[in-house]
Image (cartoon, rainbow, N blue to C red):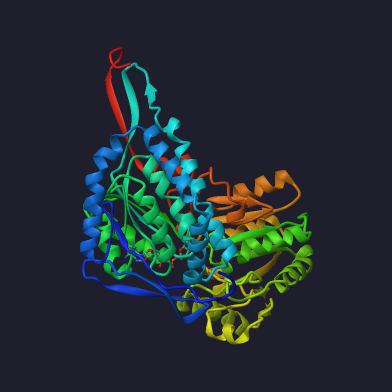
Length: 496
Ligand code: NAD
């Protein structure tokens, strides 16, 4: 299949207790292509509270067997899932193309997301040996074994922007730790994730992996507040995260929240700014049309390097082509949905109205398509006022404010002056400066001379300070959050 040849509409199912199924009332909803909003890409079941209840009960019933298996046994199953995920290249190509059409992001990226999910399964399986070791505290006064047990049914709630990578930061970790799960993909990117999840679920014992699709207003609250759900791992917006935390409080259900970001990138006076650096800055800010939680959302530049940075960013952005993500020449696809498009274009309009200089860059080969779809060219906003939305809020789109600073103290204060604290980056030739500045940033992750998913070390914990979240996914920490500590204690000399 090449170019923009019409693809067939895809119908997905729910997966509960080892079976593909429809929603209890048979309702479905349609997904449209954000590049061509008239085009229907397919439909997914609109699940109900009853379906959620069935899925949670299936996961609960599967828990005793799954949790009693050894770490090695579960790890072996995860490794075989990993192998199956990449075994069929034709299927990978099909799901990547479907993902591109339902989501908008370019084919190269959907391919990357789908074809690298296996890595997260293998990484999680590799923790089996470490997980199987208890900590031992010898007396006096007591001998104690500090062990960990899986929590039970985990609800995994995933946003639309990087649905498979984010699934990969929760699902294999939950499973190797011994939990069974109910996954809720986003309504706005449900088709390729559902096909992928069906594949995974059918390779595991019935009930271990279940998923439900549909409107959050129907199935979100019933899932989070279900009394058999013992843990919620959520990625999404701050507002929904806050709502989930309140709801989970009723059953004292623990939550991990991976929320929004407004990441600062700091270009120091001694940064190496060659074309490779501008390409990395471009990727850090504009990959997935800027719809990345850990994208550069504020670019702070030492005044001595400001003009050079603006010129370099303008140059690299001008080489990019905006259009349908299925076309090989496209670098920037549409935004995922009309609401997100409006948020970004409103922020740009506000910045323009305030008098900030705006540079909209890039090539648009098909203006008619551009007008119909949810497109926005990469936009640089120069020297914006500090209280503009484009500076203070999360744009989650291809628009980047570029702000000058004079001293390190000033830029640290500005970077930290935010309710967000997800990621950040420092760009300098000086290793000691890089580490010293990083330690002063209120952020869960700092990249050096790079920023974003392509620079992420998946072996380290990932998550936010302040309103960017609670808890950590990925790394060993991302696995043990799916477990409870349990101390087993006896008289000194008797237990150990
Ligand atoms: P969202 O908060 O609207 O939705 C996230 C998920 O929550 C979706 O599956 C949605 O259906 C579900 N949901 C909504 N209401 C719910 C409810 N009442 N109960 C249970 N689930 C409910 O976010 P989005 O628009 O899908 O994603 C974009 C946001 O996600 C951005 O703010 C972005 O920064 C953030 N994000 C954060 C990270 C991170 O790791 N920190 C990663 C990716 C995206």
